[in-house]
Length: 221
Image (cartoon, rainbow, N blue to C red; front, top):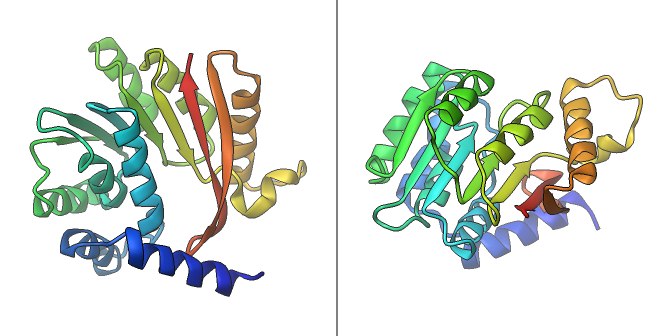
């Protein structure tokens, strides 16, 4: 078993079930065209998020970390006509690219991008009475993942699904002496998740074109 095999199987599944239309392909292409990091979820992960949104009958989704809007599009397509997705992006240039991609996908009426640091925007959302959200996807900078999770709980209701990406870090979370900020952030989050009595949760290991990582899934009690 090796990364080449995992990638081939991932592509096999994607070709069968994770079809990308031109809007999604153009969103991925926009990363390279604008010099943005190619760190969006994979097609299969995008389809997985879409299925999760459908499973919890989401009408109100919150996303932390927009980038070019790839995962945003996948999830927004699971919303009903009157559904809404609020996505937070710290980089104004990224938000501008994402807005164009979302408009190209015909989702401008369902998606609202808020620009700024998530730890500044989340209290504002809470104060404004936003939510409770049916699904919350955390895929932003890793060091404050634990704090993002705490805010996610405040913006949730019983039954809300909270998903957090990149929490295994190629297995580096096993290294208690790691000095990588992203690894330390994932470790803090995972420990908080394990100790939380507010949710029922697990972590899925994931392999494929994005190599080796994992997603945490938590349902608020």
